[in-house]
Structures are given as structure tokens and as C-alpha cells.
Image (cartoon, rainbow, N blue to C red; front, side):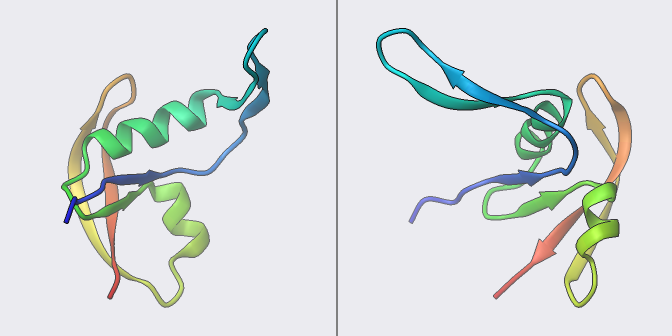
Length: 85
């Protein structure tokens, strides 16, 4: 079974359709980049979220705080893994 990585951040994005011959719906912006960088620093099989996302959805979730996570273009921050069953 393949282990997946997932990074979640919330914020504003720009959305639209790109392409001339084959159309695709896509998202852009700092929020998308941040989520991608959370994904790239995540361990396989984990869900990593930002502090901002934790502040919105943390009620009732089992979280593990990660301190000193280096995120390219942002710096060293605290993130959280969501534990799920």
C-alpha cells in the first residue's frame, strides 16, 4: 500500500481555467504554495496542517505539535500532524 502525504493550509486563492486545446481548472497563490510546502515536509502517511488551520479546526482533533519545521520561503514555524484512525 502506498503511503500518501498531505499538507493543509487555509487562505485566499486564485482559481481559473487554463489551456487552449485541453482545459484544466487550477488554483494559484501563496496559500496553495504554503500547503504544497507543508506536504513536502510531511512524513509518509501523515496529514500536516498549519497553525492557522489548527486554529480553525482543532476542536476534537488529536494533534501532534511539530516545532521548528523549516518551510522554504517562509522560515521556521510550528505545524501539526492530525492523528486519525
